[in-house]
Length: 237
Image (tube, rainbow, N blue to C red):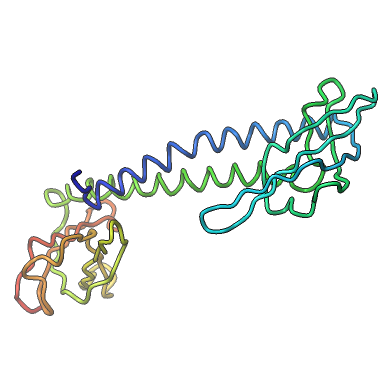
């Protein structure tokens, strides 16, 4: 099987993060709607833990999912398994009392009545938002870089002097690098620093101390620029 390039891997990761984010956020809002309904219409009682289901992650962390029974106002016994597992539920051992809140008309819709009633939906929504943000930024970086390359034809060329190399992302055991160069900004009279696009396959030929690299700056938005590594020359500024 052909190995993906780092750029392709980043595109795939961006898509995965954004696709996963949707269901996670939706499930978080679904759980929060249940929590709201329980808090406004539910009845509080005390149940007994009948079973504690323990699951272990690949990293060794443990999650606890209590199964508990309680009696409704109509003296009906209901057994419910917690819809979520958490390390916070470790304290609810088998046979111990557990605070419960349930809907009188639908007692099977019940939850452990503690701070996790709101905490779990909040964690899901925030996790989904983080996933989406990461995916969006990864995708945005690739799209932005593609757009910046067009400045070769419309930007103002500025000769910048090579300064150093900085390590960037590590993908598929490959580390990217960025060329850092500097030029005098005539509008401010100060030295401005520029960072090249990510380089994955080693430094291009001609990138040596003292070389000059052309940077194309957007006329209407000077914060946008493109460092054209193909223009590196051995002239000293």
